[in-house]
Length: 326
Ligand code: PMV
View 1 (cartoon, rainbow, N blue to C red):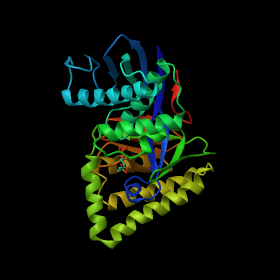
View 2 (cartoon, rainbow, N blue to C red; view 1 turned 30 degrees about the vertical axis):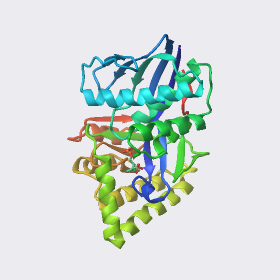
View 3 (tube, helix red, strand yellow; view 1 turned 90 degrees about the vertical axis):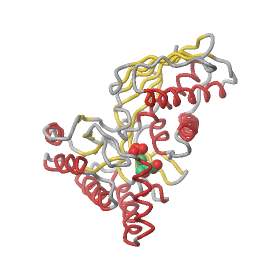
View 4 (cartoon, rainbow, N blue to C red; view 1 turned 45 degrees about the horizontal axis):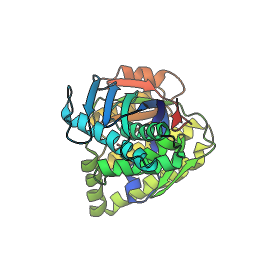
């Protein structure tokens, strides 16, 4: 039996603009998914215990078994789809096409909130299942296979950002297919606010694409986000949170101009700033979901907890560890 874990992520800078070839900087956070893999005679048994879902168990064999469902079927099917593909990767790597698995998933990362929960589960599952079969992959290999899983399950709508960041840990830089870790980044005191919702990524990306095609100033806005990322990279090695925060604020303003913020995201961003954060922005696709603020004190966290529409607020520092065996 092997247990592996992998972190979730926030975008420090660059979401949406990354779709058009600009760089982005996702950062791993100290919120993890843990996956335990145990080899069994045949088939696949999956148990999921998650903060957002009540906890469910699905049993099925690869052939004609039907999942026994107690929660929203589509959520379960999506979750099982990721595990199924991750297990297929492990079987392929170990050249054991018939290996059976019992998989247990536990996660601290809210589901579907733009914090990379599915990537973390897939990364941890590939690591645990391959190790259980006696093979050890490098984090880079796991990142690549996890990307293939997301690509498959999400019908080609996947970027390498989440899976690479989760496998490698720390702050990473993504520009097209070029992904690398940014070395020398110290602690980053992230505070996350969550409105309990989620935007429709496909719709939000399509909206930005349309604006960009229609208006030159929208295309310039996307380019300006790229400039913020490049500026941010040079500040990241220092612990100048004020300078970083200013760039976060700027990035949020440009995302809002592109139409991907929302009333609740704006309310949380302003609450965090007024609570004393060095800066705050939405993270991920937008439309709803999470904001990330930089704050060493408890001010932003307290302010968020008193903000109507903020369902959860927590601290989650930069996690320099990527996928690891527990
Ligand atoms: O909401 P998330 O964490 O899946 O991020 C979406 C990021 C986008 O740049 C909007 C889309 C993408 O695939 O990069």
